[in-house]
Image 1 (tube, helix red, strand yellow):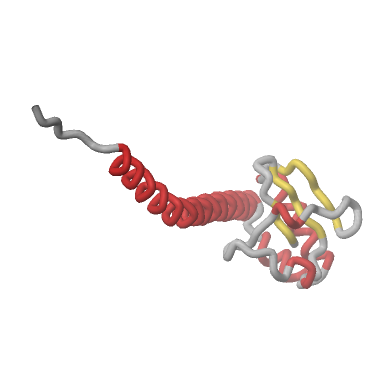
Image 2: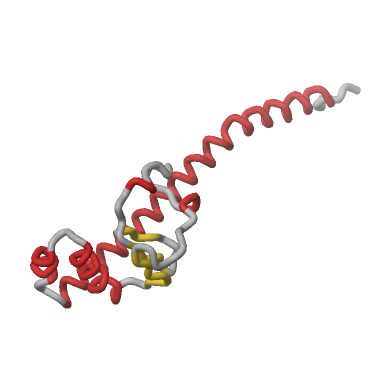
Length: 136
């Protein structure tokens, strides 16, 4: 009577091949998943900011003209932030030096890097309830 079955060696070789394929594909899948999550978070933050600006302009039709009159300076930026804040779910409102520094290692730009964070002359930021940060 002859039996047709897998031997232990065939089973181990099959498991080894599956392991190698998994080791090669899982890191790539993880990177793609993280990139998709980051892109989704940016789209959500952009949409939130866009809706807040649209609502602020709807409630204050002369907002752009008023900002232009104050100029591209700290007064104009603060004026814009004050007009925008009621339409955002702000958890933390920080002016230039009024709050402790953020841990920038938790924040990424759209290319998933942290380059350039310290190179801007931002005048404060909002941290929203969902954890996203908006710098001015």
